[in-house]
Length: 359
Image (cartoon, rainbow, N blue to C red; front, side, top):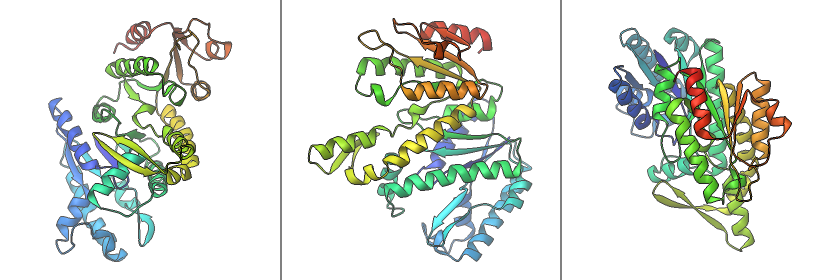
């Protein structure tokens, strides 16, 4: 198994993938991790840390090809290999590729994964390491470039090789999901659909949604839009502007960072468009969609336009569609006519899906 993993600066892919390798080893799968950046620095000890993109493009290209030549040789010996790289670089030279097609063909990867993370988390990491000058807009653009470039690389090399976009995760990471994607490829993949922004201040509903997400992840490989939550940022920014303040404070892990409200509002359109495109991408890479529609305090269904659109997209993409409807009111025909099955509770849905897929 050869997996090529890409992702933009600020992700800290190395530590993430080291955890994936430990999980693989615990399950009897030895994995060799090749970190392209580390290997390039090792081959050119005269280059100071953090300065490799400042060298000439000619030398950078030569150095990269030398390292990938070594990786290709290792791939012939290792039982499993993960290549940690970028698809693109954006630096003083402008935007340029981080891999060469001829060498990627020689490598013959079985899978491509583009790791992504939230804007605030990446912003915090880059601030801590003082790695790259950036704006929030830069982070949004770089992330989108990396996703598109990785997908194009995958399909340009081998149209049969799967490509996945995977978020690192907000409260709990997705290393177990990554491991299962690579080594349990028979397992069913589910996109989890549920209201987010519309119920952002309903604590009881949010608790129900979290229980649903947790239970589903015990049984399936899950693509969870909640692993990357950014839609609330512009809402917070607009609110503080109305209150006469110019910043918002955001929790990132166990830390709090301060963002300029105007800068957040400038990327509102980008955040919304990326959520729209990314959630459809996650549905397309899944086998099915499981949508949880919780009940609000008055018994009505907490269904959002986003959830309805996801269900329609999944139906039109010929995915299996399952809906968990806990509200007292009956679901509309637009739900029942596009769903393979509708359940009244999460346990009922889990029991059915476990029996259907023997998971």
